[in-house]
Image 1 (tube, rainbow over the protein chains, first blue to last red):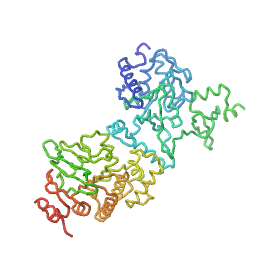
Image 2: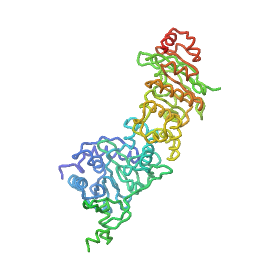
Image 3: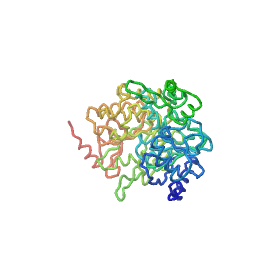
Image 4: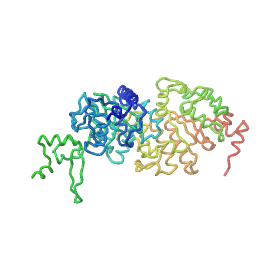
Length: 286
Length: 256
């Protein structure tokens, strides 16, 4: 443990990242460039999120990592171990007990509090990237608030699929100013972006940090006649019976059997512990 | 009557070389101005300076805006100039590919300017897009096709529809018929003439095709080596050219 500086990064680097975070919080949704460091994991595995977490963690913090809602997948386990080793912070799988939560692709179902920080791993921070490949041009569009192009994408969705088919990384407008990519969370989670906790977004390869302060207005873009809809699979969780949580579909066999389970494993476990039972859990018990 | 566009002493240099220099003219509402000259004579440089794509080294481009009256667009702020570029101005490129988004459907291409100025009703945007496809003689059924599936002439017509949908007052055209075969050119010119007259547009058309200016332009400027060598009514300049270069230009046209 003592071979590493606290939380792996040196103090100067953490200082630099904290400055970027503060600037991001001061200008909600604005992508702040920062000197992203090489981390001991490949790009795409959360190097941005890890750096933001490292700059945010204190020795008293309790750390939780989720990957697609789950605490026990490779990405989540290895990042949790990384900070256990390099920072010696206590870790947890329970959303309630965590003070810093690093996440990939989900926002926990449990409502987050003011004393919590959620850190998102972001692959591509620029929402306009696939419409306008020139970074010089997208920066200009952000600075001049020219966001008509974002609606062209939604227009294309409706004209091809009859509805806005963008299901994740659904663009939002933060505090009435910047259009932001909320990282690849399902659009089911978009309404939760207006929350009590601090939200930090880190993109390691793209070297950008941005943030949404608590209680900030976050609006999902849409058309007047095709309003935004937070969608999920129209089922109950087969393990805990929850009807309000985002579900993963699991193929059971090659005869068409499938089950739907909460993608948030902590939420599902805590519900089952308090006696909620879903369709398939009952069968197993019987 | 206030001119829609007043151009005063525009100059653009590329280092020691002259792009264009000492260009002065007024353009009145509803008027179509042609600019002809050989390759490298500074036509496109001039057009790009007027449309705000290039910053001129000297001179003024004064546009009669709807709200504030005549304003120098060279010194106005960039957001204002870009706003003009989306609303009151339109720019038709020589190559449709430069002016279209090739990965976005025809409807999306036409709708982009509408959405850029704040239109947020899908049904309305789509209706307008289909209406404009009709006006430029493209079947409504092709509204969801991408421009890459269109022929060159259709792409050019789509580009025109995309530019005119917000009802601009001034259209800049850089060789709109270049690279099209003659029968398609004729149809496009017919269409343009109709739209320009019907909407009361003012236009500045850069071309090296004298037939295009004969058909569309009220007035004509002839450029050579960055200078305007002759200017006047189109028929007057073409039928009675005074400058040696204009005489050469007019006599170079092949008669079939």
